[in-house]
Image (cartoon, rainbow, N blue to C red; front, top):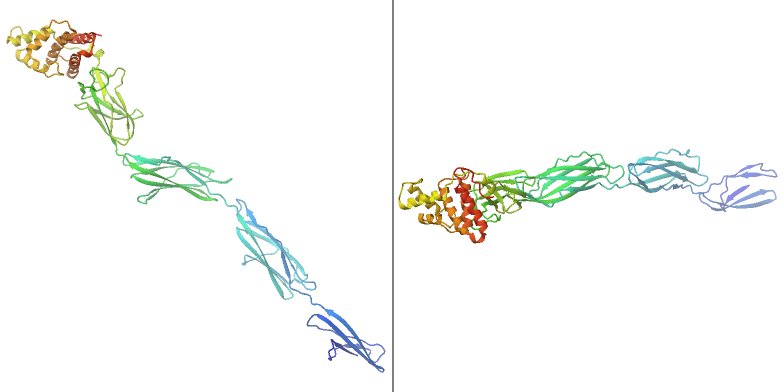
Length: 523
């Protein structure tokens, strides 16, 4: 018995049994290098000849290259406070029937070998399902690479997914003070309050730090401010500091608030500082002879009057005295609103009626002149004062004796009368300029009933009393103002009624008749 394959002349090695018998069986093992259709031919020989039998069959070769199916991993979004996550994974490695999966491995991001928690035994099945959990995986794009082997062949499959952290908005920082864009410095330094807030912008967030700096933009110098806050650790934190500036220029405030999770945020604000040198407040205190509150011709400054400067809180800033011209001034006055108050001298009262002797001033960038402050005679006070005045008759007698050169029957020496008369000629206003003794005598001896003449008659005698030292309560200045008032009324007699002229005359009449007692002028 002979067997051949695919027409080959080379017999196949076969095993037979019971040759030389009526029925013989045989077998052979066939090895194939490639798939395809094949024919086996068997020849049997006996005493009567040969017989051939053919059998055709097809060989197919199974592919043992494995396939890998990774269960998709969806992108992951983390929500605060989580910053990492555990990611489960599974995949299936398969090969053709008749083969087994010999090896399975997986790598994370090309470097980290993954550990399986449910891989069946290898080499026993053509389908293997593997899986596990990636622990504490952080944000980013990640790749899992899986390699499977079967029958000496391997294949690698990858899958990619993302882990995204929720992006937290940084804190909000707001400067609430200062609100002004510019400041004036009136001294050597300027202190400016700084207030600001930091607010965390997510649920559960806190502000743990507040900081502030001040930059001098001209020099580039940056100073760190001492920020005080009692609300750190809360969602909204309030900060306060004091900025001290010593030079003019522009400055930049930078403040920051820190959230330990969301980070820090800053904001800035600019402001300018100008130097405003202290200014001068000046004014004048005058004798308001006509009581109208206005400095007119024929009126003059009062010396020695105490003047006080008050601030807006009514606190005393400074005190000074009016000079010989009634002028006063205050130096180094910072910008603001003030009140200038003059203290009424003895026997005088602020004018017009009801006035307080004060003037309001606002100091800015220039020197300020306050409105004049007037004081007129306080007739209520004068009525209670004493004087050693002598009558018209007393003075006419002594003037007449001096004119005649007689010394008998006189109370005042002739030479003194001459001196006194010269005093009248230059004492106050113009009614008696360069008056002579004869004119003085005739004026005091006038028999006219005109109110102006009656006033002049008493006034001349009053001026002799003044020259003789008959001062109201011993106050020479006040008595001089009293005489000035009389000459003013006389000089401007056409502006007064007859009743007013007589009322003025009666005051000098009371003064001339005081004789060391109370003046007691008319009401």
